[in-house]
Image (cartoon, rainbow over all chains, first blue to last red; front, side, top):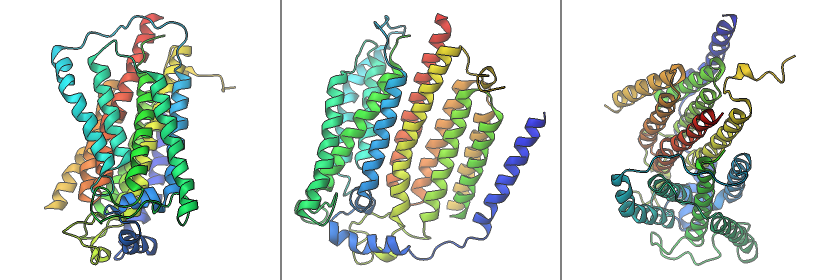
Length: 229
Length: 117
Length: 82
């Protein structure tokens, strides 16, 4: 009982602490100086129509590299915690229904294609490597749900993941040699603004991020769903 | 959009309430994911500017007028990566919960007494 | 108009969050957390952040829910074997 009141007291104090953030803060009228630089110079400097993509891939590219590394470590942790011991037991799951199975046959290629579309057009439309990778991973989930005996080939997954990661870092180093700094996207010609083949290396880097994120998420889901004890 | 900021704060408080008052580990992880959503809402709503549009340039918003017409792209970029990290961290916590259940046969935190003296 | 929309969505989200915390059934709690994420992704569109909206819709309500359900499935099976 005393614990319950302590929790309520703590929450009340916490809410009181948050109150000034609502009552005393006046909303911004202008962009912050950093954002002003990104919005003003971004389109001409990098050639990307989607400013969020230019911030993620180039201006804050190092952060994104670190973020992908965190994702990798978390995926490795999940795989380590739930690793297989000995033989896989026969699946206990029920067979999927006919609707799900034949629906998957039609939907899976479309979902995969949509994921690839999202990360290729990351510099033009909303979306990018992270969203595309997630869409691909959800396509794989559909496949796993429809086919009870389906197995993910771990070796292929590892190769996709490590190759795209290595090429990502190599492109970053290439930026130091050919352009202004690490992960600079101007190692490729900027192209015509608003076209698919534009914005230098942003589509390339975002595709690599998409493949890496997709492979890592599929790895996480695969180790979560494996039927064994 | 002060309303959405307030909503984000309320979600954070509810999530922390869940984490403190529940004893099932899965419920604590759910509380954590509610806190996550709340924090993301607060961060994006701080970057919003009144009557402005998404930071994507096209025929409607040209390069020249972008400075006066788009919202802050930096919080969007931050939250985008934070959401993906949130999924990975949630999955890691669930993996620990599954392992814990395998070893102890229970998900109740009151059954875990190793650190109690 | 948009204010009313935000208030209604916000009330639904708060109700879902309280229910998710109080709910006895783990399955309903997981699904309610997914609902909160899905409604949050609509709010991101209102806040002019379509990139974030896409990510939240795909991850928050899609993959997170699936990962939770797989974990619950694993835990349920462990209970059966012991």
